[in-house]
Amino acid sequence: MKRWIATASVLAIGLSVNASAQQYGDWGPPTWAEALNGSSSQLNTPFNDGCPILNPYDGSLYIASNRPGGQGGLDIWIAPKSGDGWGTPVNAGPKINTAADEFCPTPARGNRFFFVRRSSATDTDIFVVKHLPSGFQDAQRLPKGEGQINSDREEWSPSWFQAADGREFLYFSSTRETGGPAQDVYYSVDFGPANLAQGGVNSSASDARPNVSRNGLEIVWDSNRTGTLGGPDIFTAHRSSVDEPWGSAIHLENGINSAANETRASLSWDGTTLMFGSTRTGAPAEGSADVYVSRRTKVTGQ
Image 1 (cartoon, rainbow, N blue to C red):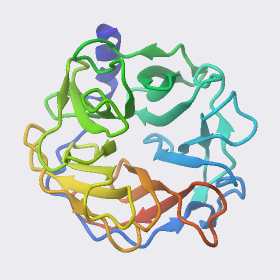
Image 2: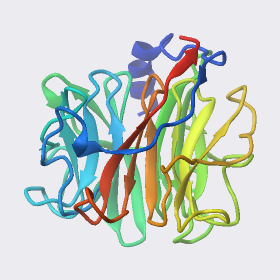
Image 3: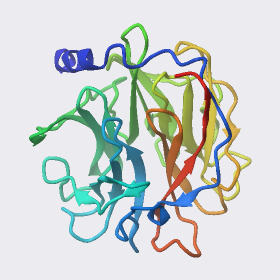
Image 4: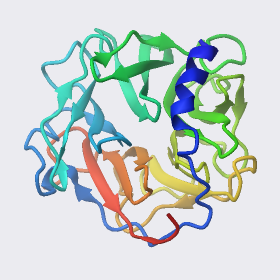
């Protein structure tokens, strides 16, 4: 398993440039994803639509949804890029989706695709699969056992990046220490043992569904810690090196968070787009959870 992953990672070497000089403006007010020019009227539905993340290759949007037409429960769906938005989502198919819940989709460089599959009410694991032009290959569960990426509890929201020195990092959240439902943020280096993330990213509350920027210096996640508007809310933190603890948690403003639940935020490959799910109500929201988009401008850096 490790050799297969290392072989795939060669395709990504050199792509995770050191972007410590990058600076961005503030995140703009969120937009209901279906309202973007070119978006399909089926992007958000009256059902649960969330876990949004963009494919770094083609800008397509991956989501988790329990809309009709799937394999059962939550399934992973893929919406092609269309204008400023995305087209009608298509089910990822039986190589990925089963009668169980599949969620937290994470397309990554090296034609890899990470996702989460539920095996019981208290146990979910992270899987990886190659996504070739011919379609998805057979999924493989990442290492499972004491101290490994997968435990006998819940693991959510895999987020992969490669450091400038070639090391591969996988961030995720887990209930392994809390016993659930509260989560903590962990990471693994080169798919080895799980380590508790240090710094402002973890608290005495639940800290879940992390997503890390391509250079490993910015993270977004959702938490119900003190200071939310209703919770969970989306927070961010920064650091100057992939080996340093995360800085203080910063609560995102400008309408991104609300009195509802905001969850599973993700950063685009260029860092200018933030996708997230929200249970906020009122027009134009139409489901138990919908997908929203916030954007910012890159000021400096490549």
